[in-house]
Length: 476
Image (cartoon, rainbow, N blue to C red):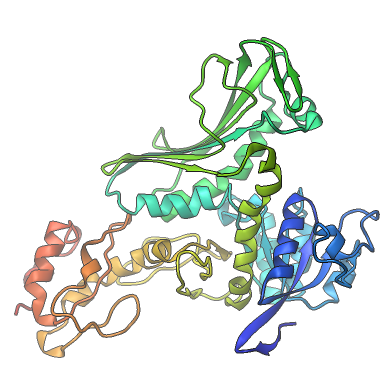
């Protein structure tokens, strides 16, 4: 139940579901958040049941009086506004029970990034649960999430032709003192062998939906998603924090998830894990972080590095995933339920991460407007991305309507805000085109139609319009 307004700001009651690396970090962020209240904690083991949230979140908050439970009925009885769902594996029975009870769900699980990628039966269950509870489910994170959705849409917004986009994620594990994880689970220090299909399938299922979401936002849906793996070996015996890598054993691994369109790799995510850079064969490896390459008519090559010492990376890295989920909670709670035909968008500064939901699927439109898929899985992005994705199709369809207004009507209204533009010509942003071929449309004095037409011809926006209709447009 939403708490009363305090100083004009709504507070939301949040439950933390699971308290692993990510869950402990999201719970800590909720305890620190000025507009969120921690209402409860769900844990998967009896050993954690009854422990205080302060202890489970790292101890820095002392005793909170909020005790963890292993009983889902106790969570449902809390009448919370939202659950931060961060378990190691997804249980759709749990998710549907939460949604149908009237609790929104924000998750770091990858299953919810792209509605059509869900099993049809599972998708229908989730849709029904959202409809019954009047709720929404939103999936977010850093990878997949920020690096595969929000950032690529910004980078492609200056392209008129996108040939390929490749995201490389680099993780230097040489200072990771986790022998069980590196040697037993991941297979470092072992003789080379074929990548297990389970590992390839796991990464494909995790990143594939996000790549499909990105492709559809760009208007270039994928035909298929594939995953491949490869390893590189230690050229000499190497000592790392977790132990020793004998010469000739696995010292680096790479899994590539490729989104294919018309037989070509359009979108690609590569996870590069390495314990040394002295490899056979030699690989082009970079410091821990991301590298994004955009190939098109405005090519880009961008490095994003984490300015954190390697021995502190394990403690710091959960924030990259957890923070986006916590930032999303107030806006998922405030959004219309799943069944709303046109989810609203909220403006904010790009750094605040406080933005509203945007539909994840667009279809062709005619005569003005867009429609979204049945399951409203939100993609939270910053202001620039929001304007590109949310209005692109709609504005393209409204273009003819704008330029056909008679000159005597006076000022026209901005397609974005509905506020009259008082300038003496076209809005400055008119020529700033997004990947879908739309423009930020607005006219100061409607008498400037010739200038508008000239700009539209130059930017290619007259393509597809009826030539006879264009000749009949009013002239100043």
